[in-house]
Length: 495
Image 1 (cartoon, rainbow, N blue to C red):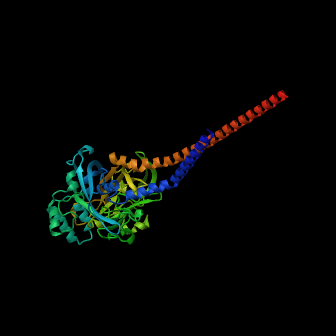
Image 2 (tube, one colour; image 1 turned 120 degrees about the vertical axis):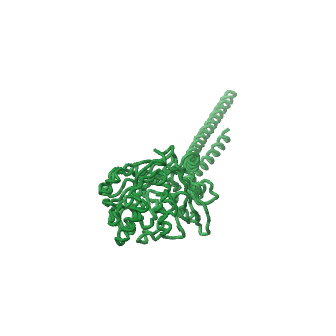
Image 3 (tube, rainbow, N blue to C red; image 1 turned 90 degrees about the horizontal axis):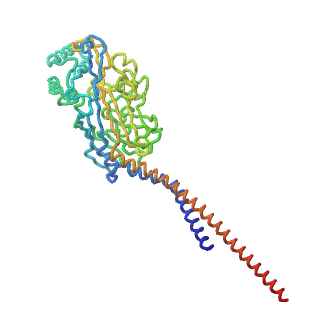
């Protein structure tokens, strides 16, 4: 029995040592295995079914919420009073995105065009597309500013043209027409005699060029060979840089296409991306850690310098001519129309902008933009991008339609694009990238713990075995002594 216990103790000790060794190896090798799986899964590779499908079709439901600024006092604005605005909305559209013309190249890049479609969601909106709102007429007020430096006879002719086509200073039309286009004899005239002057060759609408369109030909890195390059833009429409701006730095195409980023992010990481709609690269910065449905995320937001002017932030000098901080002048990529992009309600902008307009109330919760991203994979979990479209309005001599309008940056509308992982996609993501790594992490400590317990058990069993052997030997010794005594006594009796 003692030999059997000894063998058991040795066997337990060997098993315990192996378990501790395996657990210890997992402590060092486990993270490497997890990281290797992440690398394989985030590469743009048709063999990676989950991540490739997410990249190609974007299963996350995206919605665009549009808020119009209804002008309550258009006549008074023409007399020089401050515009009084009333926010109307949201008018919500489901956004469908799909990549097409996907072509892989030998230099570890892939090119594609991403097409967008929008469908009105009445159940998510406050009203219908038939709701009527009043906004500035971009065709009139934008053209007036564009022509203010032309000779007076030309401006008088332009004003006569507006009258001939019955174009007024403000438009009062249904939301649907303002969004996707309305018939205009002036637009038809301009497209016939001045082709290319307007962004759209059909009906004129603020989002007419967005629906059933693509964002250009992107060529991005697949991540093969260097995972830190995954999703980064190599070319856009065949270009390494754009030519809209005044400096090489501002014309650079940096970062990704704005949908995914390289994995293994830290709080020091940023989110650079190129936006064709804004005609420039932008960069978000880390704000704080968080959690979404049990998944750890980092929240990234726009820095206050994003739309700062060249005086407040010298690197932005290339985006000028600038006005107050908080405005991005996009006239250079919008047919020279005096259009500006900002955060909604002039959030994070120079407070003086609010003094020219009535009815605005900026705050971070409603008007700040953010992206919640899973740092280990670079995949966004929750996105809310909010931007405002503004028009420079002012009195232009010779163009009667501008009346006595006081110069101001006039908000027309703002829109927010939002989406978040949910449903089966979120469940799969959670299982593969959260649960399994946690299980592996716990398993390594379980092996170490069980190994140590097994070794301890072997030691106890071995000690118990020694005590048993010692006890048996003592009993045999005592028995021998007793026998010897009896033999001696018996011998003495004989004599």
